[in-house]
Every structure is written in C-alpha cells, then in structure tokens.
Amino acid sequence: MDATLFVQLLIAGVLLGGIYALASIGLTLIFGVMKIVNFAHGEFLMVAMYLSFWLYHYFKLDPYISILIVVPLLFLVGILIYRLLIKPTIGAPVLTQIFVTVGLSMVIENLALLFWSADFRTVSLEYLQNAIILGPYPSLGMEEIIVNPARLIAFCIALFLAVAFYFFLKLSYTGKVIRATSQDRFTALLMGINIDRIFKLTFAIGIMLVGVAGALMIPIYTVHPFVGFEFVLVMFVVVVLGGMGSVVGATVAGIFIGIIEVFSGFLLGPESKEAIYFLVFIAALVIKPSGLFGLEGEEELERIEAID
Amino acid sequence: MKPLTEQLKTRQAAILCIVLLILVLSPLFVKNDFYLDGFILIFLWGAFSGAWNIISGYAGMVSLCHNAFFAIGAYTSTLLFLRLGITPWLGMFAGGILASAVGVILGLVCFRLRSHYFVLATLAFGQVSHIVSLNWRSLTEGAEGIALPIEPNLYNMTFAGKLPYVYIALFLFVAVMAVSYVIEHSRLGYYLTAFRENEDAARALGVKTGRVRLVAMAISCFLAAITGSLYAQYVVYIDPSSVARLQLSVQVALFTIVGGLGTVLGPAIGAMIFIPITIFLRANLGTAVPGLHMIIYGLILILVLLYMPKGIYGTLREKIGRIRATSKPEN
Image 1: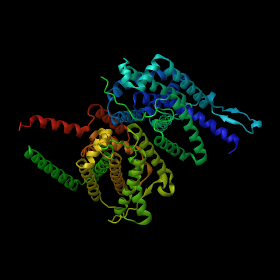
Image 2 (image 1 turned 60 degrees about the horizontal axis):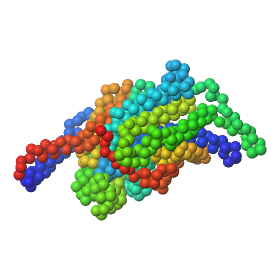
Image 3 (image 1 turned 90 degrees about the horizontal axis):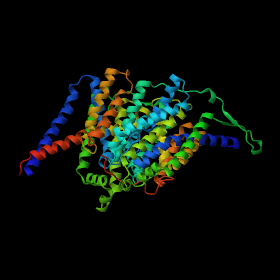
Image 4 (image 1 turned 120 degrees about the vertical axis):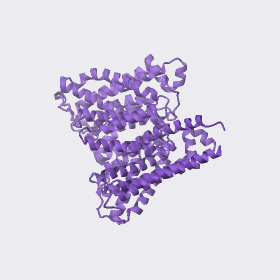
C-alpha cells in the first residue's frame, strides 16, 4: 500500500468516524446518565434525516439550515417520549427498559414505512458536488488526495459539537449536575438534585444531538425506513468501546471504528467490514467492558427505585 | 391443607390432559391448509420462544442471538442431508449439539458481563451470525439460499400434506414446555431463579452460578436449533434472511415477554396471540399496509411492559393466586 492510498483511506476513515461519533454522543449520554440503552436511537436518527429531507423537498431548505428546525423538534420529541415511555421504566428491570425502546423502535420504523414508503431518498446539493482535492505533494511522494466536502463539513461540526458539549458537561452548572447524577444518582438525589428533571433533560439532549447528526447525514446517505437499524449497531459499538457516558470516549471510538471500517472494507472486501468491527466489539466487551474511557466497574449497575 | 393441594394437582392434571387432547385432535378436523399452516407456525414459534425463555426468562440472561442457534439448526440438518445424505431426523440432533457447543462457548466468554452489556454482546453476535451466513457462500449459498428437494418420504422428513408437520411441531412444542416445566421444578430452575434475583446471595449460598447458566444455555440453544431444523424441513427453503435474521431473536423475545417471561406457558400464549394476528392481517390486508403488524407488535409490547410487566400469563396467575388466597377457608 503506497503512501497516497494510505492517507486517502485514513482520511476517509476519520471522516466516517466523525459521523459515527456525532450520532453516538447522544446515545452515550443517555446510557451513561440514565443507565438505559436506547434501542430506538437509530430510529430517531432516521426521523431526523426524513425531517431534513422533507424540508428540503417541500421548502427547498438547505439541510445545514434545517438543523435549526430539526433540533428543537427532536428536543420536544425527546421530552414527550421521556414522559410517556422512559419515565415509567426508571427503576424497572433492565429487560423492561430495553424492550420498551425495542418496541418503540419497531413502531417508529414501521410508521415511517407506512407513511413514507420504502423508497430510498436522497438530497444532492450542487455546491457539494465537487470534491476537494489536496496535493499533489511530490516532496512526500504523494499524489492527489480527494476529500468529500459533505463528510468534511459533518466531521467539523461533529468535532465542534463534541468539544462544545464536553465543556458544557465540564463547566456549566447543568453539566455538573448531569455528571453528578451519572456518577451516583442516589447521592445526587440526597444533594437535592431533581433527578427526574435531569433525566428528562438528558434524554431530550440525547435525541437532539442525534437530530443534528441526521441533518448532517442527509447530504451523504440515502434515507429509508430501515436506515436506523443500520446505524444503531455501529452506535452501540462506539458507545461501549468508548465507555458509556464518555463524550471523549465516543469521539475517539467513533473515529477508531471509522478507520477500521474503511481499512477492512478496502483490504478484505466490503462485506466483511461489519463482521470485523463486531468482533472488535465483542473482544472489547470481554477484555475491558467499561470501555476505553469509562470508569472501572461501571458495567455493574446501581439500582434506583422508580420516580413518582 | 394437604388434600386441597392434591385436589388442585389432580385438577391441573385433568385440565392438562384435556388441553393436550384438544391439541392432538383438533388438527384432524381442520381441512383447510391455511389454518393448518397457522397451527404449525404457532407450535414452531411457541417452541422457539420457549427455548429462548429458558436462558432469558429463568436465568435472566437476555439473549438477542438466538437467531444464530436457529440458523445453525436449519443449516446443519439441511446441509447434512443434501451433502452427506444423512436423514434430518438425525441431522437435527447434530444441529442441536453444535448449537449447544457454540452457546456454551459464547457463555464462557460473555457470562461475566452484566445485564446491558450481555444484551449488547449477544446483539453483536446475532448480527455477526447473519453476516457470516450471508457471506460464507461455499457453505450456505449466501443470499440465494438452499432449497430442499421435495420427495415426500419419511427418511427425507418431507411430507406431501401438512398434517405430519402439525404433529411433529406439536410434539416439539409440548416437549419444550415439558422441559421448561421440569427445569422450573428442579434444582436447576431454583438455582437459575436465585441467580436472576440476586447473584451475590446465590453465590454466597453456594450456587455455581456460572455452571448452571451454561447448562441452561446449552438446553436453550439445543431446543432453538431443533426448531430451526424443523422449520427448514417444513418450508423446504432456507436463506439468511429467513433463518438468521436478528429480528427473529427480537420476535421470540416479544412473544415471551407478552405471554409471560420465566413461565412454562408464557411463550406458548405469546405465540398463540401474535401468530393469529399476523395471519389475520396478512389474509385481510395483504401488502396494502406494509409494516402494520410490526406496529401492532410494538404497541402491544410497550403496553404490556408498562402495564403488566409480568406478561399476560404471569399477571393472570398472580390474580388467580390472590383470589384463591382470599377465598380459601381458614383451615
């Protein structure tokens, strides 16, 4: 493999990983703070992609501008879903929590199929048609390197959001409260934190972040009712690999998985790439279940009684 | 006290005999192949759900990779028959043993993970098994699938009519429930329940929680694989999307949860509720409303989890128990 090809694949992998990271930050937050695996997270991504698509289709709204509409809408959806489905399962057995979101994902996915049909839909933006070409760099022995502009934009916004969100969690009062709840919800409760409010906020922020991801992905990917399932498995891999609740971990793990996917897809053929990162995932679970950036022992969950 | 429990037992035995008799005799009076197909599907899905229930319900280790064991069963018996001419009657046991071995290895690797992490690991394994079955073309023919020759005779385990399949599926269905009943009332069942309710306490009392879960996993995988073999024999065509799809695992979980997790009859009741809904919708709406049955499945699942987390049978049993307790005379 020559240098050009290597750098080309590396860039493609990092950019792909940025998208995975962005889609996973919301999931890792919900997982870390509420200890709930949201199996419907991919379906919220799908809904966000569709929203962005329809806004483009009917109002000719640029997907990057439609973020401003999609994000508040998904925030509200998050609050609604929390009220209806998630809140009653706080403190319930893991199985109940998981399968409520599984049921939700089935309903959303098939409602999308019912109303929007199984057609594949795409948004193609004219100003993103021309690839960015870097180089050639004869001094490094490299030829031209091609960068996909839509992926570059998504990656930059993803990175910006990850950093902004990291500092929000680290520095702001709300962020500190969210982290306190994540670390020890019982003590947080004793300190007078309104856990219900924090859970609601966390869930809504998680769904909102996947909304951003959806709008950024619609110029790159085709959307169809089952697109959520394709992405949710990658998101789980990223979240567990990064350590649940860790924004930095999700970002690093997302990029890592992106690179693995691109390289194994190139070297072993596209059909094997999914199998490869799932094997990485199982290996990671077995060797270090708390993930790269998670706390030791985090996989042993604490219990809390129901919120009433 | 004693006469009452004995009386209850004989009454239960009588009810059981009557139900069995109805199950055995009723297919004889159904002349319509469409309904017989419904019987077969209920029995097969009930058996598959029951197999899932052994590890996920009794032991509380929620598995989302039972599609892998179903597929191992379906492919093993089919390939042994097509390539080596071994009758599926034996091939299905080979599939069962292979699935048990895979399940035990998976258990050895993943059983130390708790709740969420175990579910995610099995999810990954379930998806990997689908990918493998799609891409290992020299073995599975990939997405093209494998068709069994239709030469009805006993050795091939293929039959011209549907009635033999009904009885084979019924036998498996009853066998899975019997195994569940035996497990529930044996030491193994108590150990599994103890583990599910409180692992630390169970270990402190000397329960070898790792070993008993492996045994439960082996039984569960074996039965799932047998169901897979029978499914392949009935449909006479298998491909990854029909036998290795991850959604199969979700579906058996759904049937069991709605019917009643960790109970003998729960999985059967789940299958009896959902399969007729599916058949009814397919017959009456066809493909006019795509995905409608999945929407209904999802809504039922959510409602049951929120309002009767013990499932239909679990809740019913509790209610009857309470009525009995209150109406029981003082001595």
